[in-house]
Length: 148
Image 1 (cartoon, one colour):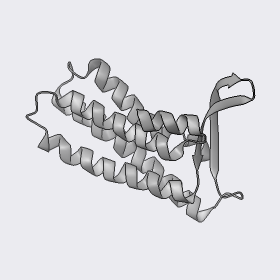
Image 2 (spheres, one colour):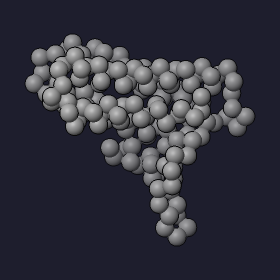
Image 3 (cartoon, one colour):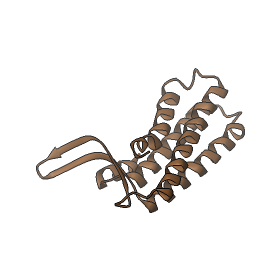
Image 4 (cartoon, helix red, strand yellow):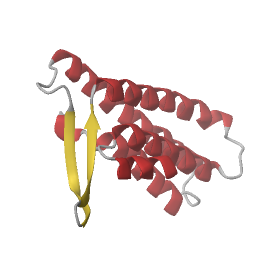
């Protein structure tokens, strides 16, 4: 299950990219499915990963996944990688589960809003940034999550 760690922040990012590029042309129900569905999928993955973390704890106490090498300047190097330990797992489950509930509630609450797709795109971007903030494995990536 550790190999799917990247899917937790990737689902809100994919939802954001879909909604920001073509959201104005989508019907409202498609926007709601993309917006809320991406967060719900992320929450299901996070809860499943949390259950596996509790039932079969990793030997070193963390899940780590390096996605790619970002930059290398002298002795400073930064990789794009995700880190999940017990404390960050709690935050990931809170962010995704509460975020999913907020998205589901917002599908009807924001129904008559003029910028329906932009609202869900912004919410998906916010959830992605919060997940990146708690799952980053270095300060550079944490800063990207903080500033997004």
